[in-house]
Image 1 (spheres, rainbow, N blue to C red):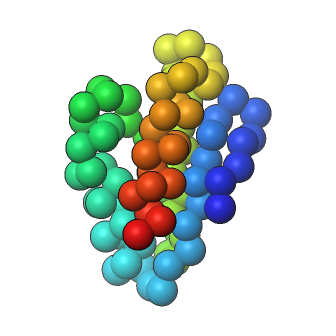
Image 2 (cartoon, rainbow, N blue to C red):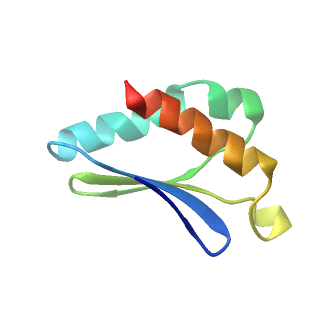
Length: 79
């Protein structure tokens, strides 16, 4: 589920258990897209829920990099 909250773009994933949540968060950080773009999301893990949060802190809100990162995350987690 993807949503916008003020100045951030969020992708919320609900998985089977905490172990899978940790794995999903690791997949997001290891995927390469964030590394290549030099733009990394904030990741929150709440038991079975992973929230991937994009915002450009130096710009005080959303930029094209945030939307591109969220779209990449959508593709990564669609599989």
